[in-house]
Image (cartoon, rainbow, N blue to C red):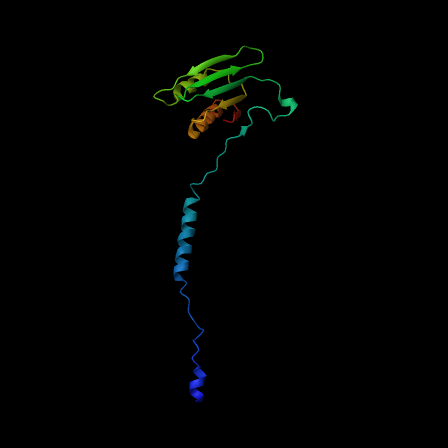
Length: 151
């Protein structure tokens, strides 16, 4: 009886865990992280509130450009200056899309050295990529303050 009771029907607690699959998954995740971090590039466009929210010293009227995008993707460009009269130009859409070459030419012909700010007025149907491309176009033409008005 003494020999039978020593085993007592208990299970052996020395169990080997197979950790090899865990290490495989971990190594694949680390390799994926190292390979994809190369393509991550953080970019930002500085924007400010279009109207209001500035201190009193910043509210002096300065020359600015107002770009309104309608439902048909036509852009109305209005040049506002405190000393001169407002002038407007229309960039007509081509095949339902914004005509980027006309918009670029219009912004190149403006005296952008004097104009420091621009305001974009999108509609509900304006696509996000069009707004970002228009902001980028303004930044490329030397306009440092670009504001986006809420819809």
